[in-house]
Structures are given as C-alpha cells and as structure tokens.
Image 1: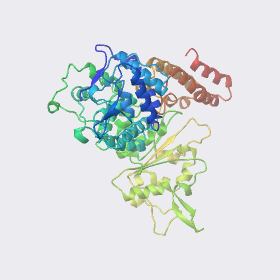
Image 2: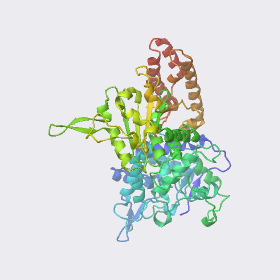
Image 3: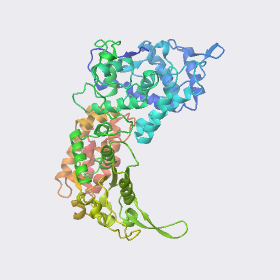
Image 4: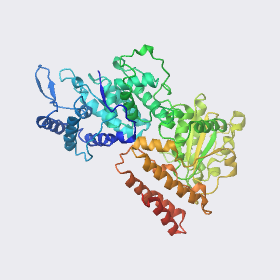
Length: 574
C-alpha cells in the first residue's frame, strides 16, 4: 500500500512543527471511552458525514453482496477519517467535527508535519463485513487499549500484553503496516510509524534492518519493539540524524527524493539492530532508551564493578533514580528482563534476620517450622542454576540494621569467600551437617539515601564488602532531550527549570548544615509516566509547591524563612 506523508520540504525540523501531537494524543484519550459505546460513535460519525462536505461516507459490503452504512468501527479507522489523502482544509474541518463528538477540548492543528496519511482506496484497518472475522474490530480496540497502557507504564506485563495484542491484530485483513501508523497517531512520541517512506529511510539512511517475521513478510510485535527500542537508544546519540519518532517520520518525508520507494532491499548494506533478538533481552541500550541520563560508558562501568565485587550500593541525593536504576542494572547484568531471577525488597527498622535469612514460622496446624527468607531463597535458586545470574535488589539498605539482618551471611557476601570451602553453619540450621555459602552467580544491589538524617551510617564491615557508586542530579542534554521528546515540553522551559534547580542545588551544597548529598535530583522534574502535560509552567509550579517545597521545609526546619525564600525563587518570574 502506498502512503503519503504530510510535511513541508526544506524547513528545519524544530519542536514547533509537532504541536499536532498534543491534539492526537488527547483525541486518542477521549476515543478510549467509546470502546463500549461504539454504536454511539459510529452513529455520530455517520451524522457528521451526512452534513460535512469532503467527508467520505463509510459504506460496508455484506454477505449478501448488498451495501449499507458501516455498523462498527475501530479506533484507528476513526482517526484515519481525517488522515487520508484529502485537502488540509477538509482535514481540519473533519477533525474539528470528530473532536466535538469526542469532547476533545484542544484546538485542531494548523500544521500536520510528520504525520503519515492513508491511501483513500484502503483507509480501513479491517476488511469488508463479508470478508472479516467477527472479532477483528474487537482485536483492534484491544491493541489500541494495550498500546495506551504500555506507553504509560512500560513494565514487563504491559509489554507482554502489547505483544499479544499486536500479533493478534496482524492476522486481520487490511491491517498490515497500517498498524504501526495507527500506533504512531495515538502516541507519536512513543511508537514509530513503519509506513513505506519510513521503512525506506530506516533501511537506506539509518542502515537499520526491519525484521519481517510476521504474516505476509511484515513485522510481528517483537520485530516492531526491537526497532522501537533500538531507535529510542539511538535518539540519545548526538550524531544520530533524528532524536524522536516525529522527527524520524518528517525526515523520511523530506528525504523521499533521495531514495526511490522501489529501492530493492537486497542492495541495502544493513547494520544490525543494536538489540538482542529476544523480546525480553536487556542491555545498557534498554536502560538508556527507558530514560537514564547517565552516559553509556558510566553504565558499563557500574556493571563492571558489580561483576567484580558482586555487591554494589547506589547512593545519592533524593530524586537521583537509585531504585529505578538498580532494577535495570539487575536486568542488564543477567541480560534479559526476567523477574524470576531478580528479587526486590526494602529494608526497614523492624526487619530481622529471621525475616530476611531464616527463622521459625507458624504453620497452619499450629506448629513452628524453619522457613527460608528471601535471601536464602535466592541463594538456593542461584545454586541450583549456576549458569544464570541472580540479583537481589535491596532498597534503602541503611534504613534497617544491615549487620544484624545479614547475620553470619555478611561474612559470606565477600567476593573471596563465595566457595563451598567457606561454607558456614547457620545459627538456624536444618540439620547438623548443613553448610551454606553464597554462589558466585548471586549479586546484591543496594540503594541508599545518605541525605536522611534519621538513618545511621552503614556498618564498616558491610561497607567493606560493597562497591559504592555515587549518583548525582542529571540535568544535562540527555535529560533535557528525553523530557522534551517524551512529554512535548518546550526546550526553553526545560533550560529555565534546569537553571533554577541548579542554582538551588548550589545553595544546598554550600550550606554547612546540608551539603551535596542533599541536592534535589532530576526525578522531581522528570514525569514518571507518559502523561499528557498541557501546561508545562503549571506542571513545574505544582512540582515545586507539592514536592520540592516540602522537601526544603524539612531541610531547613530550623530556618523556615530560608526554605520559603528558596521555594519562591524557584517560581519567581517563571
């Protein structure tokens, strides 16, 4: 299928060109509520078509070869009504009418740069009634919902659900590559479009091969996510030609004259997609793609220290992403997203050796029995699977009493004592001959907030057994580009936010009662999910008033006016 891409040749790519993304994302959000109101949706669409010139009436073909109004519709076909080969004036007029039907309160875009358009002859995402399966339209609604959920959470469960939904939708007649276009429409900062122009650009310009392991030699879900993850990782590279999916789509349009659409793929010299083949595989590239603002070399250094020392603690000021990074370092260490090999828990003042290592527990029959805690469970699992890596992530490791919680296992943590020759008899042993040692393939990652005055310093015996990595607030180009691309926040506003928080951090660092460990981290001003931020200045104001301000009140509890002044300065003239 040939596709057109709306764009303006010769213009420099800039953020202003992609204001349309706000409208499209809001349109998708409102459309979501019509999944169970499809009769109302299709009736509204037919009503608009009856009175608006330039809008094609949706006529279906039934089993008896008669034709009549379409009785059901999917979300992607709905959006496709104003993303076809029609004039801009008609696009705006139809989009405005549909937005009114859905109660979208944002204005229709004036410019549609970077948006792929459908061929008028093939603009439905499903076939005629006499050719489609009864559940085809339902499958497209499921993909639509799973895509929105995956774009927001990004966790392993939502990724798996998206894969299933995408692969099911590839079986639908007429879906094809259009699925990727629809995903791009609903979340243009999260999903790439693989329309024909974009596929040629990826192959010829970026030298990235698109896997085609799905039906009719198109991509399946894993192929699509491999491309998505690889591109997100490459967007962080200064030398990469584009730094977001909208930029990529527009660049594909602007380069269409350089590479004929019928370029034979066999003549292309491909470079491999920089991602492992499995959908669960995980590397430093994935960490960067998910929003880490450390350089790739720094992440590799952290992994190297963890492999050597076996035990590592990430420490730093509040909001530097310690817990976020710890879990991803764990996945990168074992090479894949596998929650069965990564156990995360949190230390707290009431946690004991009996909870963590081994202790007596009541049974259902009223008796007591020795039960292994999460640490010994991981020791056993790693010992039974010596060729795989296992990681225990301990959040806020200094919030408990680590020396007491680990007990004799503290000795066994040491990298030089992880052999059967160093095995010890536990204070709670199951028999006199039982000896325990920590296998070499079990790693421990802790996180520590050294700004919390209520916590004691880490025991020196524990400190000797861990490597310590200091994390600092990251407000550099990687942070600015990520937030700009993912949440459509103007780069000038982000530069101003950076300047104000760095000024605050300088004041905190120079304060004799505080110091660098009390700085404000980048997580405070990095949205935790792919939310739609319509007013960037108001968003920052809310963050200051409800998160950073209260933190400063705690820092300067004995100088409340100083805390209030620092809070005011963050917002003054913003």
